[in-house]
Length: 263
Image (cartoon, rainbow, N blue to C red; front, side):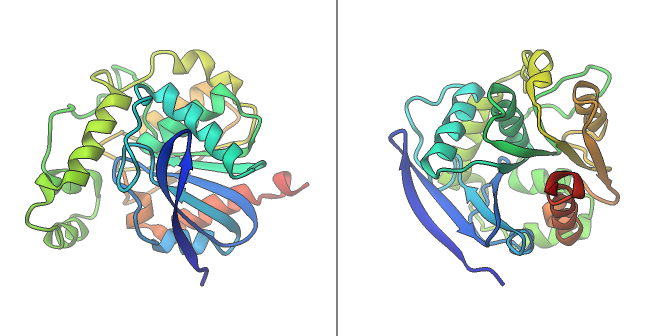
């Protein structure tokens, strides 16, 4: 089992918390609106094959909220500075939910540091024929029931929430930053114009029962990235790393170390 080290770094004047563990080619993992603040089973499995780097985004969790953060493009450019700070090249970039939106933006702004791109239940695109739930505020419990297919698991996780979960300052901070990045529209109107700039192998991973960002958006990304591989996970909602961590990590690993990439 890999040992993960958690430490703070200052990049572009912003203090960010980073977990890192494992050995191999670098795999930069961009979390969704829920911060990855502990070592999770999927991370341990990925660390068997990769140098796994899991930052808490600026404006989320234990990281600072920088004054310069005002858009998704700001966050994407920040992650190019992040990769430069750590001297990362040949990066396997993986992003889930809003982290997938960040990852796609990182890749179309400049794919040069990347070796592969994996988008998991990613945001950023919009299609009126694939309706999404409204952006109305939800309690932590309501959100958990929406993003998980397994409702028994959702109730178990709800039971472990602290009594003040909805008023927790970190949760409020995360929601506020997500609002800055996603806005009211919850999509990037420029993304369809520029996804063709991504010239690395792309893997699209989706939960088939995702209610938050419906599985139709997997094909919406595929439409703009026709060479992409698509992996659909059955009996799975918006959080495949929670509901199917072993299958999830295996799918990512198999894609990133596939024969066509090892040549």
